[in-house]
Length: 149
Image 1 (cartoon, rainbow, N blue to C red):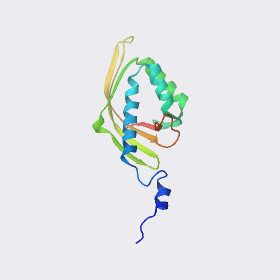
Image 2 (image 1 turned 180 degrees about the vertical axis):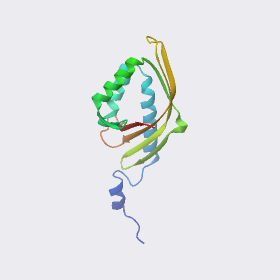
Image 3 (image 1 turned 90 degrees about the vertical axis):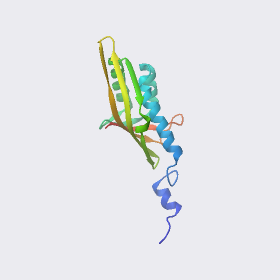
Image 4 (image 1 turned 30 degrees about the vertical axis):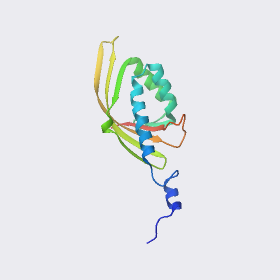
């Protein structure tokens, strides 16, 4: 029986033969920041999203360009000007390989619109696919897919 060589691993994981704890921690921290960014004032939340989403993303089952995603978010933020999002850290599960990380978990959310006298709250489950070595801006991962579970 032969032992796999480095070239075997290089073909399957482009940066290193196995993901390390640093990559998983970076993905977890990034998703925490991403989820809680929805609590920011609309202009700041949009600016953050514009810096961390890929030019085209699988967004809730459809391929969308970044400008379409930002437009969707702007409409949502206008409808719900007061928003609070809190990640449930114990729910987060990360798996990484081939410069990609898949992150799932849950967050609690609360939104309100004083103008419409409406409030809503709940818990949502998510799946993010992150490019850890692709189009990196500011050493951040890039969102390539976002799905509600």
